[in-house]
Length: 47
Image (cartoon, rainbow, N blue to C red; front, side, top):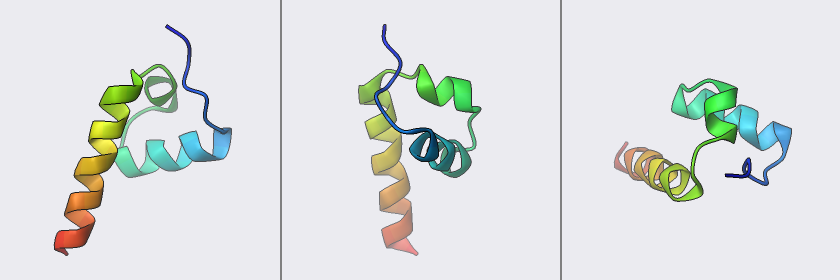
């Protein structure tokens, strides 16, 4: 599986917001990453 095609800055922001190590973000399957981002967005809208 290829690493995600995202910039280093984006990976760092995702790592911080998801509380996951940077290496885990880069090697996470894209569909799982998108699901996690959707969860964060739902939480932000509820606040």
